Amino acid sequence: MVQSSEELLARIQSNFEPQPLPAGDPLYVDCTEVRGDVDICLEFRRSITRATKTQCRLYTGHRGAGKSTELLRLCKKFEDEEFFVVYFNADDADLNTEDTEYSDILLACTRHLLEELEDYANPNPVIDWLKSRWTALQDLGLSEVELDKMGAEVSISTFAKLTASVRQVPNVRQKIRQEVDNHTPTLIQVLNEYVGEAREKLSNKFKGIVMVVDSLDRIVPIFDVETSRSNHDRIFLDRHEQLKALACHVVYTIPISMVQSDRATSLFNCYSFPNILPMVMVKTRDGKPYPSGIAKMKEVIEKRVQKADRALSLDKLFEESEDLERLCSISGGHVRDLIFMMQEVINGTENLPIGSKAVNRAIAKLRDLYRLNVNDGEWIFLAKVHLCKMMPNTNEHRKLLLSRCILEYKPGENDPVWYDVHPTILSLPEFEEALTRAKPKEL
Image 1 (spheres, rainbow, N blue to C red):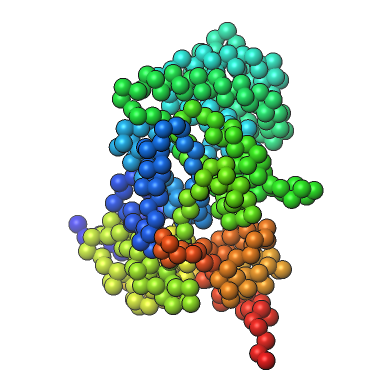
Image 2 (cartoon, helix red, strand yellow; image 1 turned 135 degrees about the vertical axis):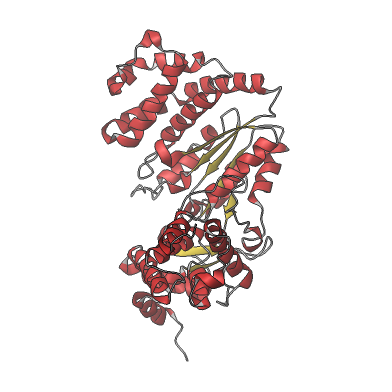
């Protein structure tokens, strides 16, 4: 049966959903060689599988760069190495990333460990902790749970309700945090008893337990005006001992803006080197196209297109081959931006091949999005980064890094990182005017 153009475009578009790929997905493209030639999965696996005590590691990169996809691959590798894996995306149901503190993360970890290990351990230590906090928790709206019926399933549902309240109900969020903060050591103690029992029962089949906490990199920084410190500092530095105290190996994601800051040495002292996933390098430091990186971005498109129709090659997909090159280049090596533009391109196309008009429209939409990310006084910061390919160590620049207006690249494993502005910004009038002001005056 011959499919219509509309049916084919619908099938292609369905393959460009901006979501992490599960391990083993045929759409996956290995970009290691154009991302600093560092295999994140291999580094984490070595540090944990060779360890004689529990490890706590940090992982970061730009949002949408592919961290979750790499973490899902990492989880599969750990499973292949005979580790019991607990993975959760904290942004799905556990955290309000607009307002997050350490106690929120501890509650989320408790909930997921309870859920995943309930067949291997007695939850009584955690239940007893809940009972001892019960008066306060009842006051926070959990009174419908009957204390004398609090078994494993109820304790798990109670923690689920606590995390939901922290995420969704601002007026009780601080009260729950205060109650958990006041009794953090005892909660960690009983949780570790629970995890320890599970680890013992699993020891005949598994080498250990690994928990992977994804999407903590999405936590929005909230600064204290008086101290200039943020909730990032309070979570990852002030509470590093508690984050490391769980009786299992843990991988936490962390905001890239914190790793690229004057907190970097403190993070190293607390956790060892954070692992960073850089951009796909689609151009060199001097602005020339980088063919290997462009080829990888083309492969991202090609695999998703050919899943819809194996006979459809890239040279048949676009009316002008230059448009394909432009999309890959203007993405800046950011996979999600490339996928976003392809969705828009397909939305603007009635029949194949894709024309330049649809491509121009998609690029313009992404350009407008990045324009909104830049405040009036920040254009000069971007212009100076573009000229020197370095990023000053200021909160203003880290904010632009977090919003992907500044991108980080690493040519090779032993090469220094360099920075540049997102390519969509280069043609904006505000940036061009700032660039003129930032260029050194000729003598």
